[in-house]
Amino acid sequence: MNAPVLAQTRCGDCPIRHRAVCARCNAEELGELDAIKYYRTYEAGQPIIWSGDAMNFVGSVVSGIASLTQTMEDGRTQMVGLLLPSDFVGRPGREGAAYDVVATTDVVMCCFRKKPFEDLMERTPHIAHRLLEMTLDELDAAREWMLVLGRKTAREKIASLLSIIARRDASLTPGGATNRMVFDLPLTREAMADYLGLTLETVSRQISALKRDGIIELEGKRHVTVPDMRRLMEEAGDDSDGGFLG
Amino acid sequence: MNAPVLAQTRCGDCPIRHRAVCARCNAEELGELDAIKYYRTYEAGQPIIWSGDAMNFVGSVVSGIASLTQTMEDGRTQMVGLLLPSDFVGRPGREGAAYDVVATTDVVMCCFRKKPFEDLMERTPHIAHRLLEMTLDELDAAREWMLVLGRKTAREKIASLLSIIARRDASLTPGGATNRMVFDLPLTREAMADYLGLTLETVSRQISALKRDGIIELEGKRHVTVPDMRRLMEEAGDDSDGGFLG
DNA sequence: CCAGAGCCTTGACCCAGATCAATCCGGACC
DNA sequence: GGTCCGGATTGATCTGGGTCAAGGCTCTGG
Image 1 (cartoon, rainbow over the protein chains, first blue to last red):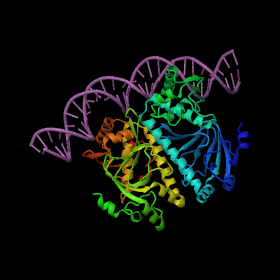
Image 2: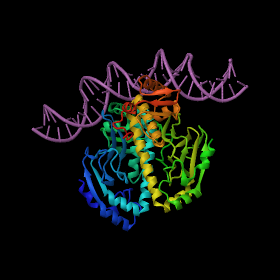
Image 3: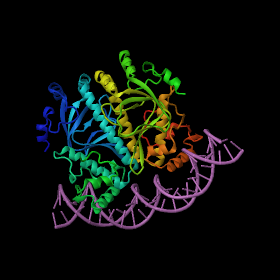
Image 4: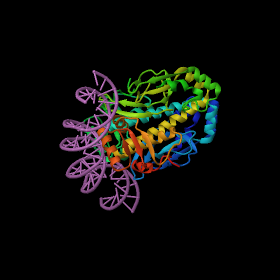
């Protein structure tokens, strides 16, 4: 099932043009990247990296969904990042991993061996530049999320998560954002709870409530239709549409 | 009162060697930095930048404390970053500010005009490199904080904040970290509440509780003595000491 | 076809932390 | 000295979301 993806996924002609490093590379740099890259697949539920492990690669997600999580010794866990296709993983210049990375669905990663990648980065300023931009984006997303975790109600949290997933989904789909959105939830209720700082029961109840109130429609447990994104974003308590439309 | 600081603060001989850009610059680069830098002071409570405003500078905090906050239209606010001396402010390559930046105490900033700074960054790879490192640090801190916001109890949140402040304080003080720590809280109870996703009443109650239990001692409302950092960090629920000691 | 496993939903109850309200304390200013 | 004012504390009460528990779907495998 992954085979066709692997076969056609080449850095110079990447189906998703992973934002990480390819977007602005010229042919020569792409050649260098090609020389140090390799693909790996992980099955749903499989760990990609454990927090604290030495990490000898960086890379980006080609397909599937992975998550960054942090766990306290008594088992409380908090998801601190959601990695969708084109997202970058790894910390150039850092020794170990800071968080657990787990494949939430089946995942294909495009990896670069770390040392050569860092060398290339040294010689190629725009790669460092691009990486800085991406890291700033992630920082913004993390800070946005701090507001969700610290100040939003359970209902607002669910609405925020749904609208973020819808938004990211739209950005990957040619055709993009419309007022009516249809997508599949890539997360279990438990994973959503870990992301939102809630329990899975509360997640379930709030999803039922949003359904009852006509904000979303559900087909099965995962397939979501949002008849009116504006209403969903109101529920999320966002003061703007986050650039989602227009 | 700020005068002496201003007088002696020169990039090449900065009292705090602000981590931002100086640490690895050679004489020539320092000269270029000197040419585009200027100092600004802000009084406690004064806004430094409003979210969405155009931002024509980057810089670092020389003295005092500033905070990054996000506010929802109904007034709920969440602090998303605490800027202590040597911390960097600004997003090279970005247009506007993403958050409100407010001076929590009187603040002195060392600013660089943005355009020339970006040009310099273009020509000087190690500055971009340094900035990437710093942004990765901030991202780690933000993600660490997501665990605090999402999964910790009020008491653990307070203990986490106190130990972070103690830790940062120690790193600025020659002599550094010991098991007994003494410092001043740079934040009001309300600001602490905004950082922690709590109300100021809960903050007050939990501080009283930690005092009652002998985890901390208070002199006045702001001066804190931690007789045993290990106990405080236990209360914070951290699985490690965060590299604080040893 | 049934059994079992995973995941999800729903109900009943409880408690940590929010909310509302009454002081208190310490500095600034008259 | 007294008054004012902006924190901070403490108490009383309420409630959103956690906890515990009982099923319900749906897919897999026998």
